[in-house]
Length: 312
Image (tube, rainbow, N blue to C red):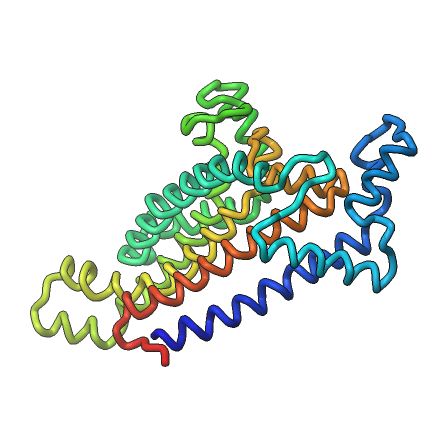
């Protein structure tokens, strides 16, 4: 197990530098006039433009300029310095303010997914071909067919504006209640996928040979499902939930934008819109680390859930 974790850590280092290089290259290639994009319609003086150009090495163009700026960024990153955005704020300060909000939102979405998606999936797998099973399959198809860009404004209008069950927007300092509706919206797609995955896994394991052996030994159905079936069925579900947690922690741009949530996704979208290259690359660098660590935790959990799985 130790050798496996060490090998995965080395792979994570390569994946991290590869991802940051690609993102930096995309921002570098698609960059127009970030200074004017930041200022909007307001005029930029020659002194302001010269100061920002020198500070962020915007005068370094071409292939040589790209690698000069990239290695300068990596050097600062290895020293724990994420740099400054074009607005002058420290990117670490922006993330420090946005990260707790996104973590709360992701945990709400994950709790909704586990409580309703996994539980309903287990029941649907046990009661295969029943009315409950068929109803959940239809509902999950409906949810999966509605994109978040449609579902989020619809939920905001119906539950936040028309029926006033939840606050329509989260505001600058949202509490858990204000994040509940966007958390449900964010977790709806994960819920539908987790439900279908759990249902399929439970149904397949119920037809396995070890289940028939347990029944022949006289074990009651409750013990067979809780001790044997669930343990084996949760392996693909945990894989999905671990990867999905990394995605949710990355911040949902659409959900945070619709509900005006000052989280990571909201700041990432703002950086893309204003062509704030340092902010975009800095946020993406942190999100890549979160995503890689979540995948590592999932792989380690394999051996906990199934003793047959061992890594060398």
